[in-house]
Length: 411
Image (tube, rainbow, N blue to C red):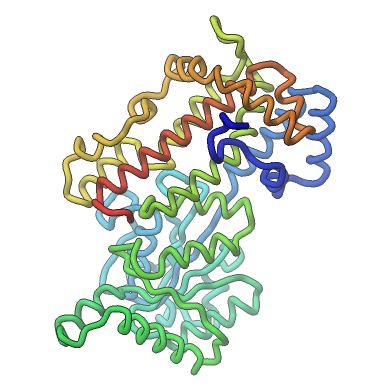
């Protein structure tokens, strides 16, 4: 279909893949309802799936020795500065006396736990997991700022015995590189230094009988540097699908690759949103041959803006971080959603999307027959789908341009 925008619509495989957190019984119910033309029944079941995805809880445990930078990591992974409201307290001495949850400021279902330092008199490695409530966490980040020691190895082995995943993070890499550069300015080679740090970490852990340790080199102050992307990709591959979705949307927008992945993840949800909008509490819109749940669409569009960091709070923090006027950052934003999301704005966007509705309907009928009744229910599904797809791409493009403007490079 020549007019189809690239990446606009899901393939059959992608649509089926999106069932991965719905039971086989639910899949059959949805198919049966769609094939029988019972749009409301299908929409109700899909709404349950959307809510399960939205509420999927992710609990990340961050631990290490005192002064290793674990509290700063807790803040950085949530996109929070050490001096911001809701930040984990940081300091050169142990400031965490009990497991402390820090919710993500925009995704409260994602909880990052700052655990007490291992190896302190109050928290010995042999009883540590029981003391901190091991069972509640999905995975563990074990942090060291210099070298990994016996306590790290023992804790990793205990975590492994109990069937959960852990990842070694070597923090404060930027400080080590800077110190080396000052001491040996002529011989300094960043890549060689990073290899040496990684090799030293591996040797320390292997000496403690940790087999093939995976080590990620990070800076809490420049999260986009070094191995953060590799850590993100590793977690993305190893988390269950519903928790992967929560993790990805909660990531700070520090690279174009993260923005691309967020766009793809949200694109996969559009057919569900369009189905629910047109099938549950749908209300006719005067002047349009469309019936939909405008409140649901307002919520979805607000989530797009929030996930891509185009809300005023996120833009203000970014401007402050890069030392540029806020208005200069905003210059590259084109989407009206960055300014206002209201019923009137949504109705105008649905009006504009009407031209794409037929294309969407034809695609679903010809490519994924079981979803043909989505289109058969009238023009509402196609219009809503096309509006959400167009809006998501506009917001994602704006976020892309904002990041380039902020850092003056293709980060």
